[in-house]
Length: 140
Image 1 (cartoon, rainbow, N blue to C red):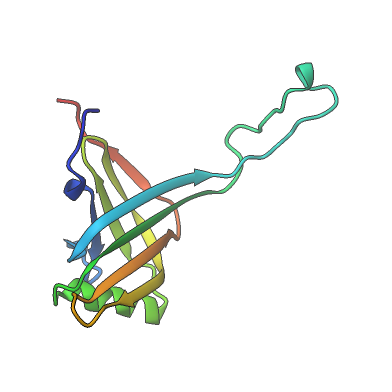
Image 2: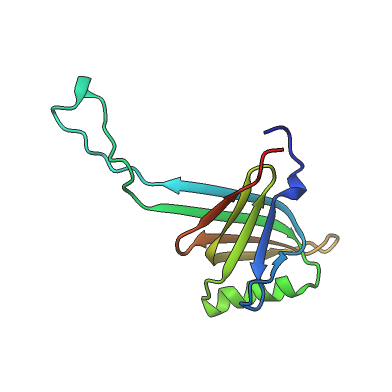
């Protein structure tokens, strides 16, 4: 994978539950993280005293974060609604030249900030809330 344009990393939310995804407006910076817990099965009999891990075990999770400016869009209102209602709607994460991740996420935090001589900004964090599906982007 070559160099990519950061603005092509998109976070999209299903606004109405009908599978129509819309990019969360105003985001300037986004980050996606995938994690898998380790299950250590090392014993005194482990070869050379090296740690052994149990393949396929442990909890998998993903987190998304982003920051940006208000754009007076439906997605601003939707993010607030998701947080206050405790919903876990479908999201899509478009990772350029890699693929698309789709699944349920919970908005775990929203932060608002602003200064008297600047724009109002926000930061949002999401945590996976179920199994995620990955669709690889075809290699060109």
